[in-house]
Length: 251
Image (cartoon, rainbow, N blue to C red; front, top):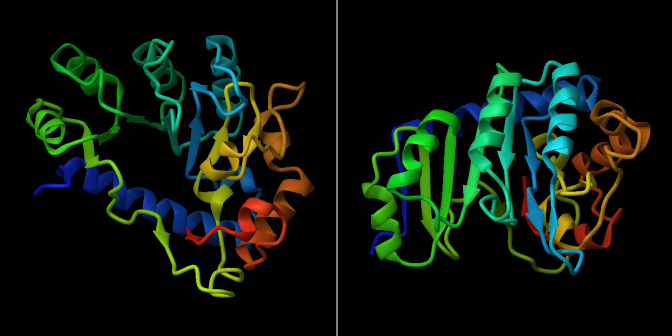
C-alpha cells in the first residue's frame, strides 16, 4: 500500500529548506537578528482554536508582506497549517500577491486536498512552489498523484509523514533537554496576528506577541523577549511553556 508520494521538485525544496534551517541556526548562534534567521513564515488563513472561526483578512496579509519586504525576506511563506487555506479565502489570489511582492520568497501551500483537482491545477502550477497534501486514503493519494502538478508536490496519507519533523521516545527525562529551533524553522502567525512558537503552541491558543498591534513583524520577532525564548529553546530548556514541557519534537 502506498502511503506517500513526492516528486523531484519536492526533493529540491525539501533539501533547500533543510539547508536554510541549518544556516538559520548558525546565524542565530553568531548573533544575527532572529528575523534574519527564519526559513518559513506560516500564515494561518483560518482557524478554530479560539472556539470560533477566524479568518486572516487580505489587508492583514498585505501588512505582513510589507513587513517582510522591509527585512528583505527570502524564505518561504506557507499558507495554512491546521486551518484549511481554501476555507473562506481566495488562496491563489493571495499566493500570486505574495509572489509578486516578495520576489525572492517561495510560496508553500498545505491542504487536505479537497479542492486540489483539474480545475485548480493550473493555478497551483502558476502560484505555488511547494504543495503538501494530506489525504484520507490511498484512492485520494492516487488521484492527487495523477494530476499534472509540476510544482513541488508531497502527498501523504493521514497519520503518516516522512519524518521532516522527528519525534523521540517520551520516556521520563528523555526529551526535556532536547534543543528546539522552532522560531528559526517556522514562525506561525494566527489569523489575528498572534505569533506562536509552533503549530502545537497555536493549538493551545497561545501567543508570544502580536504583529497587528501597532508593531512590525521585525520589531516583534527581534524583541529581546522573543530572542531569549528562542535562545533558551535552542539550549535545550523546555521549561518556558507548559506545551514545551510535554513535547517530544526534535526540530
